[in-house]
Image 1 (cartoon, rainbow, N blue to C red):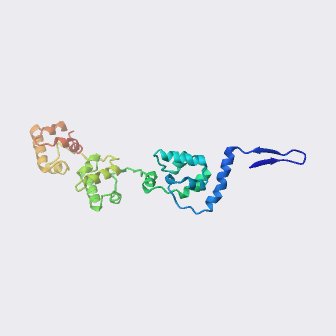
Image 2 (image 1 turned 60 degrees about the horizontal axis):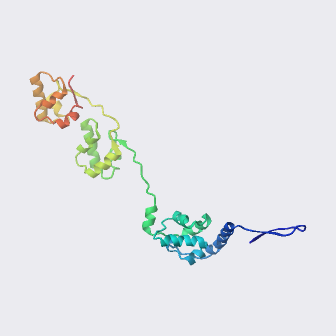
Image 3 (image 1 turned 180 degrees about the horizontal axis):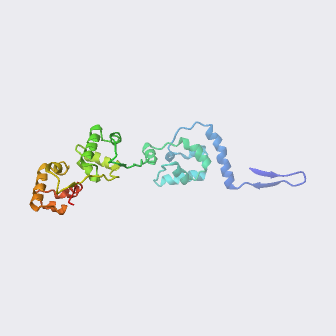
Length: 250
């Protein structure tokens, strides 16, 4: 192809187009043939040199593809194809609709959408909100709310483990979505004036332990510090921090 610049008074001048521009023009010219030719979907890894030429690829681009494949590597995306062959964006746009990669490659290249979990307060959770958690049905949601009432509100996330009937895997899912975000306002009993019945209504104190606390209080006249409760026989020391949420000694 030549550029011609001339008039009646001047001699004709010719100048050649650069190799790069000529290559681009050749690619564009071949696009008309590609558009007007029925193309079946194909895996670019097994593109023959003849078909590649028909699609408008230059010899250099085809050689790059063949050299890449001969090294035992595979093209797994349109971006890989462009990087390896260095085809123009215009040619890639024409070829792209016909690329067909194996299903496992397609699935691998699909971006996994991560759903951001919004943590909610277990102390204000409704039954409707709880049943949305996988594995939490109406009965389990009711158990969570009823136990919350017995406790006067959850103070620690770990207390959800105490709810009856929740499998470990379901509990893990629940604790990802619901946590203690607001501390409950628990009315504490005076350990020196509380009756056996009042003490036994605390979730972590049974009737026998309530009687032991009252008996110890009678023996020492007055409990000065809740830490003294640990002296009582059969007192559940591992539950002391939980029990102390409901009592005071002043």
